[in-house]
Image 1 (cartoon, each protein chain N blue to C red):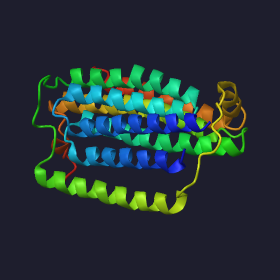
Image 2 (cartoon, each protein chain N blue to C red; image 1 turned 90 degrees about the horizontal axis):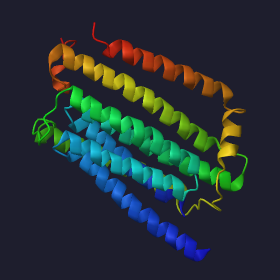
Image 3 (tube, rainbow over the protein chains, first blue to last red; image 1 turned 135 degrees about the vertical axis):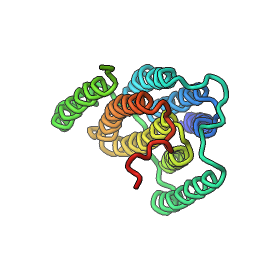
Length: 169
Length: 104
C-alpha cells in the first residue's frame, strides 16, 4: 500500500511538471501551431491525473473530447484564419502589459495558494477506489437527469449556432 | 495523496490560463488559454469528487460535474471559433486589439 502511494506521488509530480511546462509553453510560444501542440501535452497530462485519482471514465472522455475533437477544431481555426505557419512576433501584447499580466497571475496564485493551504492543509484524499463507469452513469441518469438534458439541448443549440455563424452566404 | 496536490496544480494551471488570456492578442490563443482555465477547474472537481467518493461510495457528483464542464467546453469552443472566423472574415485579422468598434 505504501509503495503504491509513493509510486502515485512520483507519477503525480512528474505529470504535474509536464502539465505546468506545457501550459507555460502554450501561453508563451511564438508559433500558433506549436501552441496547439503544447496544448495536447497539457490535456493528455490532465487525463493522466484523472487516471491517478481513479476517475477512468472522465479520463477517457477527456482524451476523446479534448484531444480528439477540440484540438483538431483549434488546428482548423488556425488554418482557416490563415495564420503564419512560422514564428509570429505579433501574438502578444507589449512588454508593459506582459509584466502587468504576470503580476496579476502571480497575485491570483498567491491568494488562491494561501486560501487552499489554509483550508486543506494535510487533508488526505482517502482510500482511492475505482469509480466505476456504471456508477457514474447511474448518477447521471438519476440524480442529475435534468441537468444532463439541459446540457444536451445547450450543446445542440451551441453547435447549430456555430454553423449559422460560420456559414458563408 | 493530499488533496492539496491537486488543488495547487489546478490553481497554477488556472493562473497560467489567466495570464494567457490577458497577454495574448491572437483570438485563437485566447481561446486556448480559456481551455487551460476550464481544465484547471476540472482537476479540482475530479479531486474533490474522489475525496467524497472515498467517504461515501455512492457519491460521484464530482465526476458528473466534470463531464458537464467538458460538454460545455466543447460548445464554447465551437461557438468561439465560429465567432473568430466571422471576425476574421469581416476584418481580415484576429487581433483582439482590432475589435474595437464599440469603443467610443
